[in-house]
Length: 347
Length: 162
Image 1: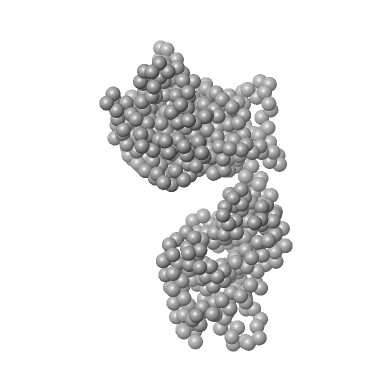
Image 2: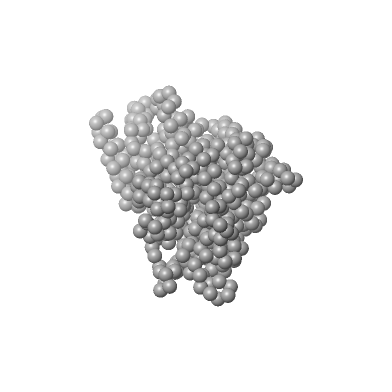
């Protein structure tokens, strides 16, 4: 061993006496922990709100139910309560359907699912995963007829879409949320718009609106043109799915980041405004309780990177990675799957 | 293996503080570093306790927090504070030798953080290269080159000082 190495060891050993006293530091840590817990509670509430709003602004419905004689809205009202956080075990799976239902249509019930997304919150609550299923994916209707996934909403409503996705993936959903663009528009307006980045320009054929490549500010009026545009993309609805994932990720970041929604008054206003655009089914209490234990709002988007067309003009849904991906969702092991399949992860 | 955070803190806090002093060279900064790390340890206790080695996991958290400027909320706070305390000489019998060794201590402060961390992990914590690489999340080759570069710097400084 060289001189310098010996001197280093000796230097380190002799400076051990510099270390502060353990008991004193321990007391300071405990104090800091109390403060951190309070902050975390506030963050959790914002995080819960973000996730719930992301899953189609479900909060309005729940709060409406509470106000009409249901359980009192404890988790939102009292930010200073000493953390009576229910810690539900296990992962949470939610099916998010974005419908293209537009009021100006003659028959509002005639809707397609523009977005079919599985939301998976792992048991350790470290992330939120958004797994997009292609809207043109080929599925089998109960009668044996082949159809596109997007059409299932028309054939049998959200119930049928959920049933078919469950059969395909084996995932049992805790809740299902159907949202149309009105709710997203309202939420976007409430947070003062969302900043996000587009890897390619987007053009909305129906409105003529253009969004340049790069980072931009998305206001309430931009939500529909941006999230509906599909025809100009190289990979059509696959690219649109990723745009939607990016949008939701930015929205989640905004909601958790600026603390807008820890303000009960603003939340109430939001709640009243957004409630028309959503429809909700499932174990709402479990959804809320699970969302409430979220500490981080890191959002990871998963989608198919390129076309897998069938002869009939439909798409095969995750033809190669499907079984492993679905098993990872069911087994709550998405972290490993995502690491092993970077091609499918939104950047 | 400790099961609760309390047990972990009881048994490991002293060693962590000493480790942090070796990294930062200053007891106040070390105290801040350990405090912030331990709060985060509590926030993520389930994950820490569930890892193969909670001890190693926390050392990794602390080291990364020390090195990583980008995440450095604590670092910003520390840097915005007044000048760091001057390096304190520790009383020792042989005055000359002390001066020499405290010179080494002072030189450590000039090394890049990653290099200092590598030296502490090797010559204070006595970890093998592979474990150091795992703590820092880099390749074993990077660890070796960091060590030799740091040692070369120290040697050159010492020669100059003599």
